[in-house]
Image (cartoon, rainbow, N blue to C red; front, top):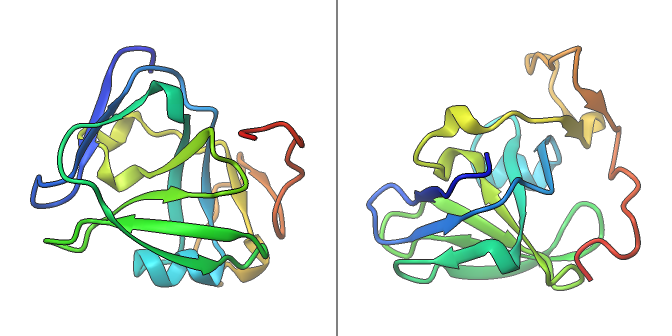
Length: 144
């Protein structure tokens, strides 16, 4: 995925692009991501803020404390409500993008499942992906 990748919300008001390989790709099964996605998990690409550019309207953000205990800001389109981004103030160099917001979501290949202790029995996890019952170990300097 080294070419420019584009995405946005359902109505097209929020648009973005980035131009580098994702730092990480994952599915998060925490209850917070389940609620925010309206599904079994949130599926994300994590990219460097320096390679990311917002092209359309700025998402509306709401802040909360995640299941992992850190502050997060969830960004969504103020017009259509589509979830688009997540910002973590403790990792200001990173931006989390909802995989469903990509113009071509088939480009997303999740590498791991996190917070699997919250996954539902009906949520069939890919046996080939690395799994973590909670938050995986994160290098101290990642995104800070």
